[in-house]
Length: 378
Ligand SMILES: Cc1cc2nc3c(=O)[nH]c(=O)nc-3n(C[C@H](O)[C@H](O)[C@H](O)COP(=O)(O)OP(=O)(O)OC[C@H]3O[C@@H](n4cnc5c(N)ncnc54)[C@H](O)[C@@H]3O)c2cc1C
Image (cartoon, rainbow, N blue to C red; front, side, top):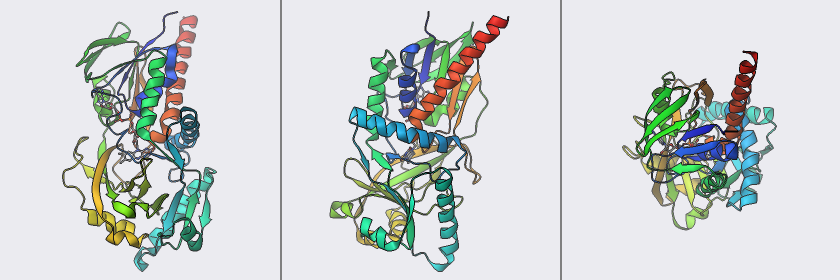
């Protein structure tokens, strides 16, 4: 039987995880605008495999974080991808009096969300925080010991190696520019030529909204939020060894500037969340390092004197801009030929990648079985 042909647009972690999951049941080609896979947001992130404790429990984001985190841990173990179970501390700091209520509200919310999802976490008293992280000063916190960090670059490379081993083709320097539905299939023009497919999957990250309109789907508004990182230099890079987050503030666009140790031994602080005009606005009007120093020194006074250096930034495509928490948008926009849209794949997209891939595979098999049923009935 002829295998359905699938074009995946975008060779980031999402495109790679989907290609790997669909495997040899489909004839898969991945079109990537850059010269190799994984050069955009899938590289420019914190590398944290989130538990879902910060997220609304019923959301796709939380569900995929719960499922995906288990899958990635197992995969990293099987494939020897560098990872470390460092655990995550969320700490309430000795804030100014005016801030205490905000601090407690945010703290209660993370606790409630974590409990509802049965995430292994516990309250931790200041003296026990000190035992784990002697340089962190807090009035209390939550500790989720199972959270891991991974080498996100190696993870993406491994997904593509698996996909290619089961027959997927990756075509780089192939920016998609045009699409047309013709006689039950898609004809897709790219910088590397024209491709035909029965199914197109939009995994174009920061440009997914543009691809969506090329394929005749509705225009979805997208707001870009840059997350910047500074790096702690010299011996001070050893001042913490775990993920240490402040309490999440209601309405905040990110999780608050925090400590992120990386698998390569760096200690990053960030990311913040600053709205920018476009998907490639990585460096204009950089946030000064003092803003980072002040945020983190609330719970780690030693940072006041540490030497910091700009590290990098990544950009989140957000689907809401009014203080509400938008979910991932993953749906079949059109059938025959099929167009699957993935939009707003911001954090925890890395964590969720394998669970998203499962979800897309289920969506495709449900349309395949419903079209079989209708042709039998006809
Ligand atoms: C600052 C920051 C920190 C984050 N931290 C975490 C974290 O710790 N944990 C976590 O789980 N998640 C985190 N995330 C989220 C995570 O990084 C993303 O959700 C994930 O990388 C999105 O992957 P993607 O494949 O959708 O996008 P991308 O990696 O951007 O891949 C999309 C690909 O599509 C290609 N493309 C675009 N347009 C076209 C076109 N027209 N034709 C062909 N190809 C095209 C691009 O070149 C790109 O390679 C973070 C994100 C940011 C910004």
